[in-house]
Image (cartoon, rainbow, N blue to C red; front, side, top):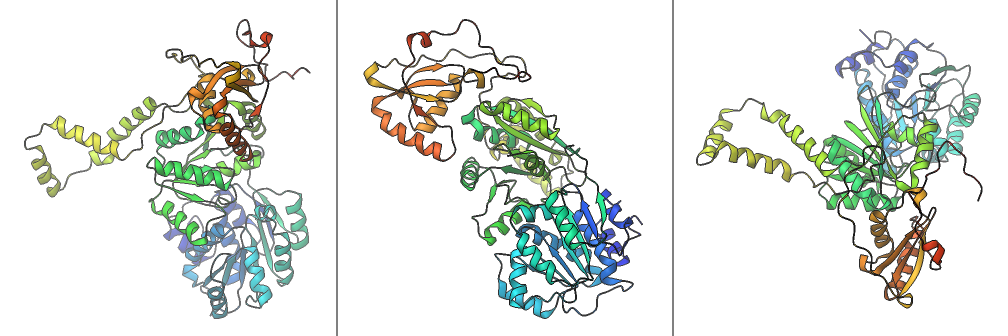
Length: 559
């Protein structure tokens, strides 16, 4: 039996769930002394919940096969978010089912009175978030006097979210003679200090690979025009057709906007952000687990600790803030030995920022443009031809109906109808612009019509902080200006692209509206557009020959 060294009751539960060999962190926990505290760092998706569940079994059960009647809790598991706490509770419920454990949850956003009744009725294991557990402790609802095991799950996240004071009060109230298991993705200085204060002679277990990205994740970087991020998300979802996809945005507003855009296009999508009620968050997660939704748009905070089944794709609609955010986001996929894809959407203006981020993370990403409609339709064709429904043996009822369908219709007509039905459920891919810098140049279409020349008294000049050094091109600048300034293409006059900026004309009759919309867009975190003077005659002369891009390996010279 692969889990022979764990408690027999848990070994039977693991076998019933179809578990094979232990993961590295589970094996390390099984080999650790049963009477020592543990300080564990492990990658996301490494089986940490089962690991600390097994580590707690001997202190809680000893040689007994089942728990006695539930009273004051024997084990306390503290997790940073509601979703993670509920997920841990579900895992421990089946893991300890053979032992007859009563598992109670205490999390923010749930009915506190119902939790009080559950605690009063007795529980062997309590799982909760720091703030709610502290509230129950101060109100006298939570009795920690009988605790034998305390688990801090994702301790680094709890400190990042500002729960240090709550954790210290809870740990100070727990019996000194207990086993403390601290699990964290990284052991930073604050985590080490917490361990020194609340653990005794802890065994250090480290199964992470330092400075290496997750081996089961394929990283891609997709360059896009700044105004086509949304279209790129659409085409990535259509190209990969993953059973589950998680799309990260930086703010609640961006989450809400992108979620609405995907729903408008026919995607079954849900959203997760801090402004949602607990019921809305729970319903969104359940829709993902049931397969009723295939994409989730979320902020970093809302997605902490989530373990979603069949999550094959992570899309960074906005670049992560740092290496830790990149690896944490990407770690939502490629879990438990399954393969996953993590895609960074990189606007042309943020190419160097993305390169620095990937380099610092040790990630070797494949660069490309966004999937084209032709590539997506080719994928659709391959998926249709490989669909198991085409090879499944038909039932007599199926054959009878098939015969009726073929009456008066050719096989080709029936096959064409099948293709139409298949395509009808798929959102249409978007046309996206790609400069094609990482491969052969794409054939250019006809040159765009020149913008109308406005008389000097008919136009006002503005500037964008984007130039040739950031791949500025009228093909995507014009739609970007239209979106940021709420103007139409005929209201844009001349466009002059320089090394580090672009100047352009806006018709006087649209100037007031343009200024107001551009200021609102800048306040929302978009590119800032500012008024400027017309280019001088010398500036208006186009450069001779192509503009040279500075090598990323060379330092910029001072101006």
